[in-house]
Image (cartoon, rainbow, N blue to C red):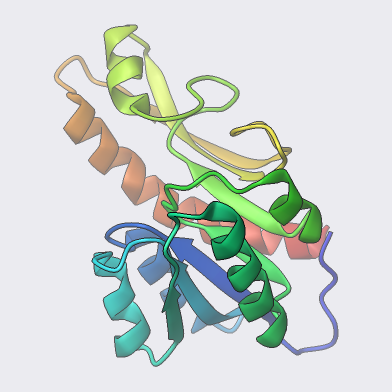
Length: 193
């Protein structure tokens, strides 16, 4: 686990691919006194990711990497992360699977938030799959990233009740609200272990 040293905040990078709503909530979290992290870098594989605007708004440096060649992209990302002395990586809707080599470089220092109650519904289209299976509950999970998809050690989970009127879209909205609450809590938990 990452050790918190004195009052200095842990330098963190957030990886995004889309709207960056979890990134925004993490940035707001870093402004609070109890936050053990400061976000120093935003990384994306998508030049059009709406979330990149938060880098400009909050003056956080951001970099976009072309993933046509994953090995080259990851080498560049690793070098950027080392240059910025990043000690924690938070995946927040990053739609690329990290290689085993990348994960090995940052073992125990990569977190992900996933929109289901893992180990159920790993991978994509979770909300539709949950609805199709008539589940009573879904939710979200913050977990450590290992080399198997959505299979790392679970840090925290939040259950969300599914109403009979929920669609994949309405369920996604309900869960996203909980994600924004859960991710900061999970980060606090990691640093108090």
